[in-house]
Image (tube, one colour):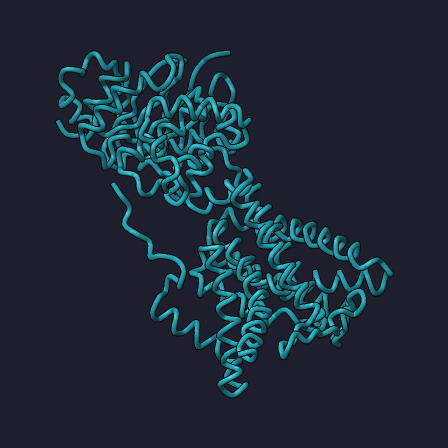
Length: 295
Length: 238
């Protein structure tokens, strides 16, 4: 029994990362109809920045994170204005997606130049990522508790912004019908920029909180990005909660696959899942097929 | 300076296809004017250009003396240029009240309270169903919601695009009869419609657009009793 709880918990801990990145991807896609292929690398740079401020500039842990988040927000603002905005006017999907691939490539190389290619440890106060509690036979890593708490807080904040603020209302209206939203006075550029920043902050939190788990390496967020992508597909790519649920589900599936199948198979699992989902429910597991419009 | 809406030599198109070939049109302050024409004549393109969704390639659009051609839709909404789009275009996944909230975007919450009260008084069914997704409303109720968004947005220049589209004729008639009651007397109105009979009852003047060009401009009086006489203008046949 404890065995299963242990596996389920392990699945959750990875699932949180997929859920957060899935959420970040869905957010941008839903509002702006853009697939951001740079999301993973951007998240990784947030992790590097937090590490850099703390380890190389002797900044207290929390302050370093705040600095990293501010830089993430500002950097995303600049990226959106310089690369995405000029292309939006073309009204075409593909050029923007290719542009995000270009941004990904650029950022990956900048981070390689700046921090080098070797793995670095992201140190957390009291080295609590190395503390393991034993509750009966159940092993609980202290940092994993922090990961869970951070995920919960992040999701709550995003939920609040989307459902309780005027910006969130504008994002939802814009996601439903761009022209109608514009005719109601919702500004496209404002909604777009804030969606990108919010998405990058969610990604940034993920990059930072998973840095101690994964070790900082040039492309340490890539694997999370791919799985976040799968999470988003599982959720139908148009539902924020679907993306989160998809991430958690993927985490569990993976954890239990490792238990019962050869480890090598677990790596192929996400792709297999996408294949099956796209065949059976192309609109995702958690979104309904678009119904007929009423006249 | 109140000069209403003035369009001179307007040319608009999508990429390289020009759709409107030099339109001149004027709506005086407080006047109700209809823009008629068959399907594909370019009526909606004119409205979409006035409300800033499209940018004119040539010509000018002024509202109360200010050039508004090519402005950002959000700035136009602030000026009081409000469009009720074709096909109602409610946000189907948002509930009724959120739909109305979007219409108050960027404005004070007090205004929203006021607006909601006014709207719910006029359409009690919307209050009853305010927590329901707008996509689940009937077509008539969606049109109520679409008009209600415009009421909340407090228009100075109101652009209504084809209210009759996809609605039962009786319902459409109801809506036209209610228009005078829904919006204040001094709102300047430009109404796009295929159904000439209804539009002429409500508007004092009208224009007929065919293939992106004006073919007729007249007082409604002259055609009120015989809207079929407009057919030749619509279709370009005698």
